[in-house]
Length: 377
Image 1 (spheres, rainbow, N blue to C red):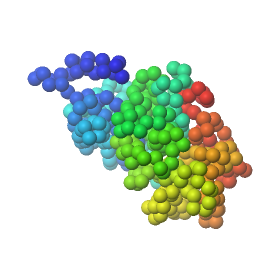
Image 2 (cartoon, helix red, strand yellow):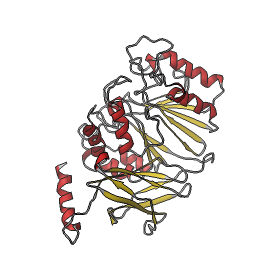
Image 3 (spheres, rainbow, N blue to C red):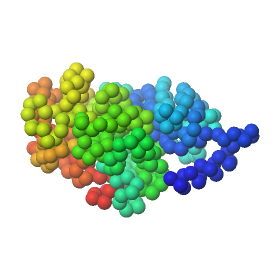
Image 4 (cartoon, helix red, strand yellow):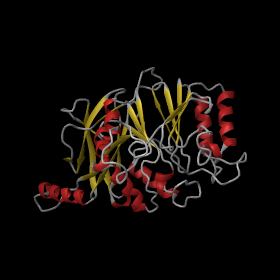
């Protein structure tokens, strides 16, 4: 972080106010998420308390519209989420960040694309990037992020294990996101080619949740959820975990949380052992949310993004293979209710694979690592 501090000092010298006061500056972000057909959420972080707005428009040379104002402060480590509303569906927007009315970015400006209206039958493309090596692991360069950007995905899912550092402290969890958002080293192409060019979504697994093979007994899960909400523009989440749902045209996507509600893997696999509702939240729990969501969905396709493999034959432990009663109940529910178009996408293996449903009951794709030594793309 010394290089960043040095650059910020120079920036202070160039932008100090006439009265000698120092202007606040953008230190991390922007990251655009929570996108639908008419709105978007933008994560920003400043170095001190500041008023932040976003100038945006459909032409990079005409950023004429202004978002509502967000004030950053120390309780959230000067992080903030700016909501932009009143957008047009299926439209590319360019934007700049204003901190205390001072523009922070220069052309080419970052961009994102809003989603089509729910139910619209559109052809689209999305990417899933999962199991990140982070800043300290792997060779200095991977082609994954550049190659992904060249595909021009309509959105990108930042899958599970966004990092592998297993941090417990509030400062450490915040620092993880800040380093992942810093365009240096292994993350430079990720920041510039993914975060500044695409709408993103994210859900966690054990290492970014906070503990290797973690489950509902992890003592700092409320802290993990707090930092996730502070440092990522998530879709609506509950007070208990980060399961999320969003819609793109005629497709519903369910992003599962396989950690905060998971019974310990070592528990005997019995009918009440749960991956999704170990805290027995019932009607407000994740399992009930998923079943009702699938049954009520009118979308042609239903993608279930599970952090760990659904295929019980490829990883019998620390995956759905250790929760076979609940897995069978989910499979039976989908089949008995004639829910069609279900596809699973998973990670965690640090390897890629595709099953046509012969072993997974439904088609499943396991996504390989984004930028670690075990699986280069």
